[in-house]
Length: 239
Image (cartoon, rainbow, N blue to C red; front, side, top):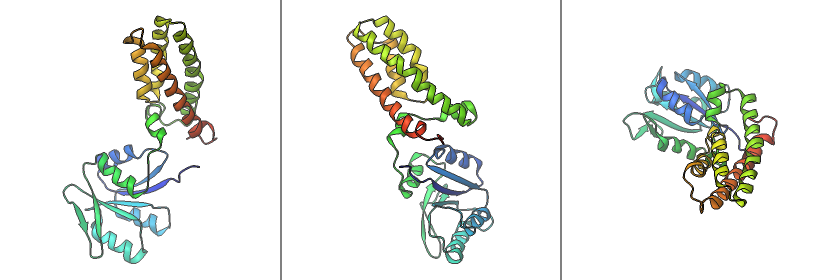
């Protein structure tokens, strides 16, 4: 079952803050709406468009966070979780409420406050792979990304089987060559453990290491493959 996308309204004219925030929340679990002033967010809310959390800079134009939040609460009965961004304050008070602050410049601790407010828990697959490199390489071309995922599964799987056979035959030099060959495939999806296992097999393993490390690499591949198939290849709208 797919987790519903969470909608975040981000009101801050600071381009660096926008970039840092958007980069962290650039996943299929969130959709960020960026506004340089509060008027865009107010219009979004007036039109009853989705908004699960509001993040607004304390000095947001045209009337600042305090007046904006009072207006949203009093006139539009806006009840979604709200944060105020600030470089110095620990909390932010208006006439009717006290709001939690996200300290700038943002770090992961601040982002996790937003995730917690949205009830978001990272999936295992978030730790197994990332599409960031493929998105950057292809300019977000979903066809290219899907083809790359398919290629990873179809090409790495047989090489893992080959490694298992080579391990049984104690063909250590061949194992090193195959591991070196498939390491970029794990790097492509930013799977650090797979890449590190390949690197160890290719350059550092002693004869007594190969069997267990090939088994570890096989387990890692099967786990990655399982989640890639569940997250992408089992549905038509892969991304």
